[in-house]
Image (cartoon, rainbow, N blue to C red; front, side):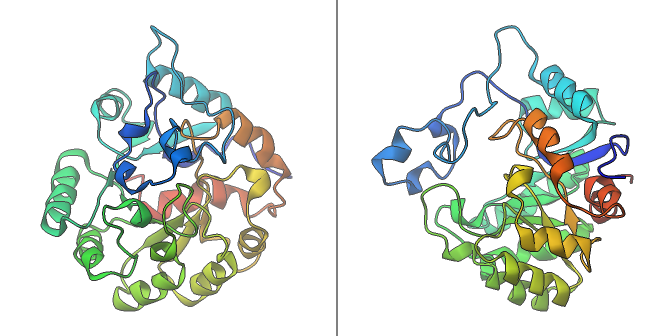
Length: 288
């Protein structure tokens, strides 16, 4: 059968293109020390080429994104923040977009209040965080994250956390996959989703997903031809319910490229609908 094209895929990491991207847009700009990063518009452009984050004058960013989603069979996109464009998209197209927010737990009380306000006002479906991009960095298992994790449990929403070597040129240890072991032990009710590869510790990520029921993985920031073999093998065996699709549009990879490469991923037939839609709908409770 191969990859189906009519399941209504869920993309767990999507945003809107804009015309004036700048390195100063990134909150972790102060962490970057090398001259090369200072010259970049996108702090991982040394990895990604032909970044699709541009917008022609007069075009509406929401309409551009929706056109790309429709072309590739993406029914729902999870947004990563609540800026003006995202709020408009949630208001005008509630059937196509779901909300989440990004937090830096260095402000512990502020993060918890931000989550609760966003949940009350926008019905957010997840909380996201970039440990290596926090200022200062915050390890995944650090005490500063613990009130955030408990708030996610109280609101019955997942936590999405970067795992593995970060793309921006900042230290990596705070995102070592070993940290998830302690978090899952301390918060057995938490649904926590690793994003951005977990490399080079993807084998450990699989071991921990086997161990902990609440630990999941999404494929964000990777073109399909680069999906880690350990993750594909896990999805095809005991992990069919644990691995979910996420892209990287428009931050680094076009939807067109992603869905052109996707059919070549050697998922088994029963894995495809779970990977593309069913797991995300269940874990993030997107139909509620």
